[in-house]
Length: 216
Length: 348
Image (cartoon, rainbow over all chains, first blue to last red):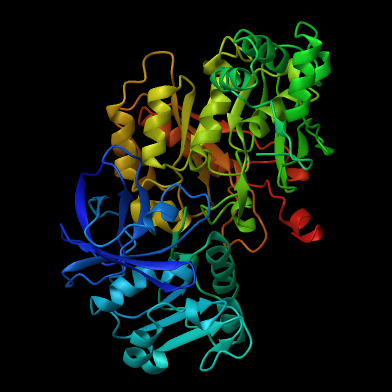
């Protein structure tokens, strides 16, 4: 379906326990929110990852966690600068074209929103980012300094400074009012997506205003 | 995959896997065919009952393996004759299978995953998230351990999970079900349903002869992506393009599953667009009643809506059937299978 290109790794860095940021040379234009397939050989079935870098970046960034026993990530984490991997054309429609929106992510589900953020699409957006602990709030410092009050980090672990204590669902459930007129974009595990979607619907947001991206 | 005492099940292994295994155990290669025969053709459930295999070799097998069948742990019966069976998976989680007897056929709806990652808005399974993949053995076990297995005529992979998110387990299970060395079922009696994971769908189309069913639910990308997040990754036009490009032959069928939601996806505009996008695809549309699930914003259609929509589609030349709701009272109907509560109760 998609063309596959050899790409050179520029850097492959552990940015948090079990989480890596892969930086490669960029071969194509893309829209923030799209995904690419990654493989070690052109004939392998690629695994899909959201692009985390902005559309103006010269590099393409991929945020990934190492899944023990996984087909790609355990090996990928051992690749170094200068190594070649294979990447497909970008594809997918998880793009945010609205002026105003709420972005909600957990874990590496932050990637499409990071791409939107680094592409300059963050004006009038509110970002709610969740993780167990602060080291799982990837790109936290960028969001914190740029978005100010429109950035809400949530950590379920006790004692994480500057964060709402609890899950993103707890944060949303505690809000006095939820704006039902604006679109909500969700990205994360199936559990998070389903729970947040149910909660938003229960709080009066029409399902038509909820867009979700899932990991699989 | 190993059981609780650390032994691997034989049930679920393909002939080539059995061949590799017997060679490793220093047994003659033909033993693999004998084992396959006992596993998939005969009504036994223990290694010891494999009477044409020498005692020494049976002992060797028992040292390393278990037979691997597991009976359903619970059965529920609907007033309409549908039965729902609960099976325990190897990781101690639960899955369900629905047996649907009809006048001319008896269908088993099997699960391919514990839970599901796809997060479709209308599906109860999606609400429990994803807890794990089923092995080929666990998929085939739903058939082999079914009390009504001798009356079974059709199998549909439409239970819990997205089959093409477990391609390895599903393809291996199809091999076991349809091979001469396996259960010898006709692939024409088997339908695998997907929401449209294109790369896996291609592998299936190229390597299996079973029928394909695609969950459609709306012909409009914008509308579909609000019901089914997968649309954001694999868009409907690409799914249809893939199907168009693959010659299915005369024996093989593509069907499109279309759950009707009251006031949402059954207008004249939908009829027109369905006729347009399905042009050139030899297919059937199966209309399904939406079965309301907790906290859903969607509504069930009336009989009148279903009939009117069917007639409108047929007037456009689309072969359309209305699928009766079965097993709704025991939560066995389409989109209602879930073991979330059970998982919670068991503290998992």
